[in-house]
Picture 1 (cartoon, one colour):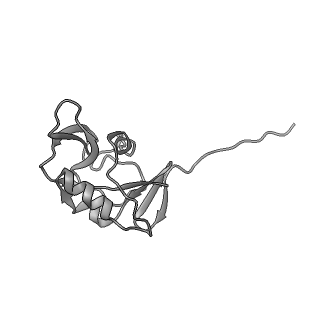
Picture 2 (spheres, rainbow, N blue to C red; picture 1 turned 60 degrees about the vertical axis):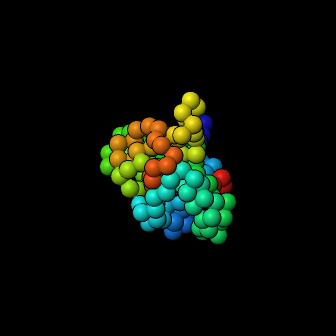
Length: 131
C-alpha cells in the first residue's frame, strides 16, 4: 500500500522586484509604499496612474483585501511575510464608511488594527491588482 502526502508550503510569492502575490492578488511592494501619502481621492488617482511590473490596472484595495495581508501575530509591522516595505502607519482602503460619507476605512500596519479616517487627511497608499 502506497501513501501519497501533499504538503502546501508556499503562501506568499514574490513575483517581481516590486510585487508580492498572495492568492489571486498582486500587491505593490516598492519603496514608494513607505513614502507616498495622499488624501482619499489622491490615493485612488495614484493607483490608477501606477505602472508597475508591466501592469497598469492597479487600484486602492478594499478594506477586506487590505485586512487579508495583516498578520496580527506581528508588530511593527503587522504584515504577512514576504513584504519588504511597510510604513508604520495607516494605509487607505477604497471602502467608504457606510454612515459617515466624509470618511473611509484604513488599516494601521504598525499594530494591524482597522479604523476609519477623514477622506481629506493624508495616509499611505499600497496598490493592488487582480492576477
